[in-house]
Image 1 (cartoon, rainbow over the protein chains, first blue to last red):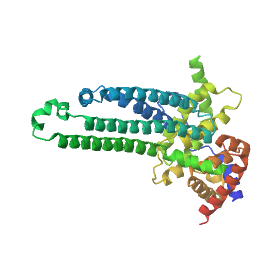
Image 2: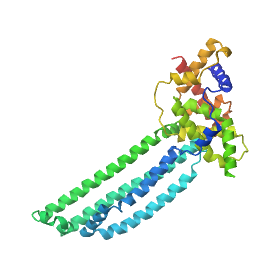
Image 3: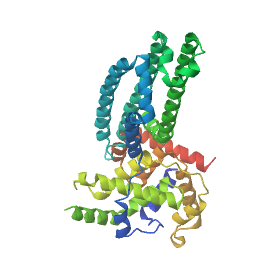
Image 4: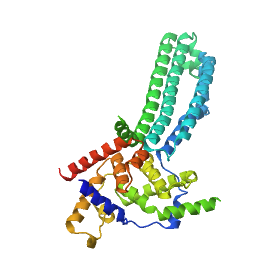
Length: 216
Length: 164
């Protein structure tokens, strides 16, 4: 085998690869193209992770939703709660930025992979945090509904059609729908997120574990 | 100043493009992916170029960026398609320089190397480029001992591929 590999080496070094040589202009054009590296993708997805939930609050339907919070009497708690989530989100953005800056293509392969995985982990923790916060919001709302003695007034526009339903029944229905909606939302968001990253980083993770096992 | 840097970079890359073509040949299976990877490596080289201080040779500096792009940053999945066309173009060996057995042997070797995983290919690539184990270990971030052990395992792997 060594002989064959030596033979290959000799051939490799003298071989002019039979591919068309690129001209100065062709290379010059290339340097201004957008990169499609996974680091760029991680940056794009992460910015979306950080901003999309905030943008949702600007939608009119979400603002109507805020009225319902008001009506069931949890708006105050949710406001305090959202200040807390903002502080934590800024912490994550700062961490993400710091780690992202550390990524350098000039690093050795193992370090480069490690840093990319670490950066991605920051986003992963943020997503887990966000999803838990959605769950907490849902729980606060369920408790709000439970403690609310005048649940019908929370839905002024439905007042007429709700008159014939007992308050107890309505409460349970509302609590159940909020709960089910919350679980589906969390699972869907989590599912999309982990699938996306799983696919994006599969190759990198394989190569990293290959290099890491070498070190053992 | 920027124009000057640009010109210097493109000229150097143009002179040394063979290295990038070799990496692309190892890691891709068709002409389109080859060009795509070439472009991504070029972008990464250009982005890192301001940090290139010129205390090393441009070509030496290129190895790390090119390999890192191929095994870490490059996102596209390798499509499993019929590779024979592409390979016969790339690995065309000038017939008059080799006898037939050697030519066949080389063809099989290239085919076998292409079947290795990404990390193994990186080691073989550096080995074929006549890098010593210190350089190999520094580029990949493993110890020199591990690089040697790994290289021996790759030789065994290649042997199994060639003589199943």
